[in-house]
Amino acid sequence: MKLNFSYSDNRILRHNFPLLVSLITLLLISTLLVYFNFTQYQAKRVKITALNSELESYNKKKSLIDFKNNVVDTEFDLDTANLVLSQLIPPQEDYFSVLAALEIISAKTNFIITSYNIIVENSTAGKLAVLVEGEGDASTFLEFLKEYNFSGGRLITIDKIDYSQDAFKDTKININVYSGKTDSSRDNSGDVDLELMRTILAKVQIDIKEQVPVANDYPTKSNPF
Image (cartoon, rainbow, N blue to C red; front, top):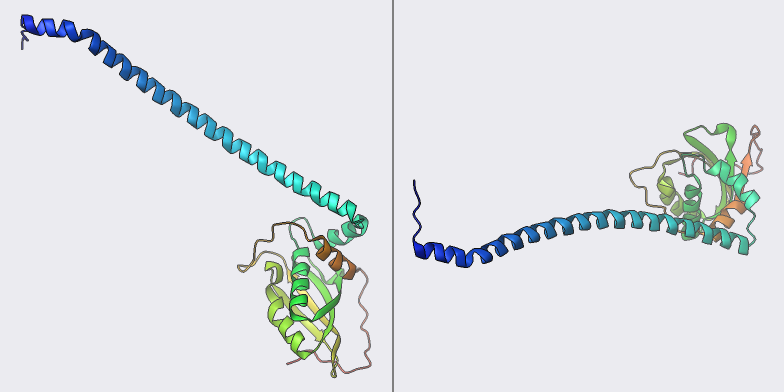
């Protein structure tokens, strides 16, 4: 098919040709600008993500430095802490959080825990055996038993309970803390409570010898119920 252009058509085309070229040039420039800006946006987004990650790392380091300074300022006994925490916090399991949770429950229920005795010979890779000693009355002890079993997000079972028939003083509870978070576990991340750590460390003992049954002058029961 042959296209025929009249003189007027040719004249209009020649007259508008610069405008057409300008429009095509503007379209190309706009396309290049969009591509350039999109590339810049992607690069900046990657850089911002990297900077946020770096900032988070610096914040974690700052928190550790602040905690270290707090430890130094309060003259905390790091040697004792390292000795006990090496038993309470194996490489893959945070048992210390369990004792921290038990301390909170103790304060909440008024059943006062006086000591934790870690029984090394009864502990395994997946279980920490602890003898918990405390004192209170029947009401506070029952409240404590309602709260203990998922402390720190880990399953805890009781092997044996020894208590006075007349009062709940010198109550002994043999518990097993199992490794692995339960479904009811909570996020324990956050600032370290130095005072809580000091309280727990003051109560912790590590029994690395064979346990010898202790004769009590008062009758005992295996279960209060």
